[in-house]
Image (tube, rainbow, N blue to C red; front, top):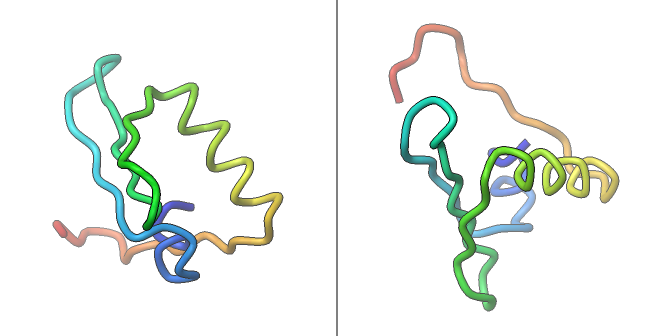
Length: 65
């Protein structure tokens, strides 16, 4: 869903860091500040994107990037 948000120009970019339960997602929404979300918050954020009409993008299986 975050890839779709970038393609739709809703957000500028995002990335994740950490492992397991410690994974955090960093989202940059353009003019606003960069915000770090935990798993529960990013699931809610992606739900908001879906409700706003953003279409998810998927990468090809097996790609490392």
